Length: 203
Length: 340
Picture 1 (cartoon, rainbow over the protein chains, first blue to last red):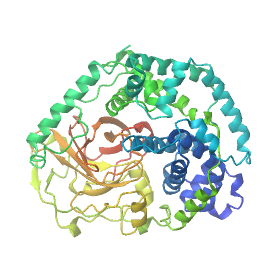
Picture 2 (tube, one colour):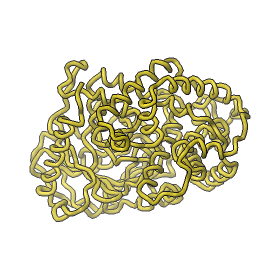
Picture 3 (tube, chains in turn red, blue):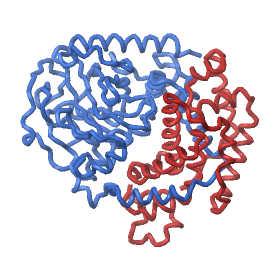
């Protein structure tokens, strides 16, 4: 990928698009990565925290995600999606991996309630412009999730944020596998219909 | 609609089990190692993949009911492979898959944001300052992509023509390391060509998606250690390759002497982002097809024996190793230009 911006004219990186910044970072420009970090570290951290439910582990994931972006930014293809969805996809994989690793080890004594953990984390305040679109997007998705029947929302939650397979969910809830599949399917279709057009349209 | 937990997956697993046994019995290199822990059954293809022009003509059952779970990451490895395989020739399911994945990408934004400790940023950039810079066009020549092949006896084929046409294979021992050392490959070529692993013998070459990561651990010891893979020296284990997530591993392909089969062996597969093992895909002429999950023979090693699809050309075909939970559409379909 050859970004339109090059290091020579990268004076005001804060105004560059994500795609240009990751292009610069993949050429070895740490300042470009820093701009991306400032833009998205909160999103990545919060998403990881929601999954791993442990602040220290979420911070480890955060660091690892951006280190991967630094090392592998050259593999990002704008044609395949936005930088942020790429970054969050890496985050999801790494955070779920942590959860599954912990399943195989003795549990730490973390709170089981993600909201409790989130509330315990100091919020640095809405200091960036991105907060506006983020909040708007969050409200829209939260409203869409709220319209789902609780059972469908639960199936999606356990799969996506807890890293459980549909078999594990069926076993944990004592429901037939087919029921869980149906809940996921109906829930995702309903979400799709309600969120149509809400895709993250960042550069 | 169909239930892939039923008939299809049972057949899928049964085929894999059969081939695994055949592999143990027919491959001298594998015999005697049948007690190794096998985490996952191989499921090589036995027929060329069918091509259906539409959903309704797909020759196996549909996977509609698994697609939402796929997008949510809630499938087991076998099921994921089945979905990906089906979607590779069923346009309707491929569209559904893309649709559901797009919906799933919205879910992270439902989380209220909180700020991480400022220490994370400091630690990250300190680490970056001490790490190897990403490989760029400017410094690509500092990196060497190919390493010598040593030790293991290999089987080779006539150096020209379509190797599948030949049933006469000759076992050979690779030449000395220096004799097979390949020239340095520029990053530009590597980006477009992928990393060939076995071109020396004119065989089916392992390839991985373009990644700007070097395989020479003398240049990149820090990098490799940081990623948890401290055993990237491929001496005796084939040639270095880079998995789709950029982890250095080693691998080679060995065709069978008795049938139209080949086995791919991969080692040093340590990748914390791969949740459910690895999948082998055969890429040729700009498209790919799933061959099956890599049978893990140890924590970091895997192998897969597979039937070579009729018409496969050694000059154009490559194998692509991806994480089983990765979408080959995202990691395997770009830059499939065959190696020169």
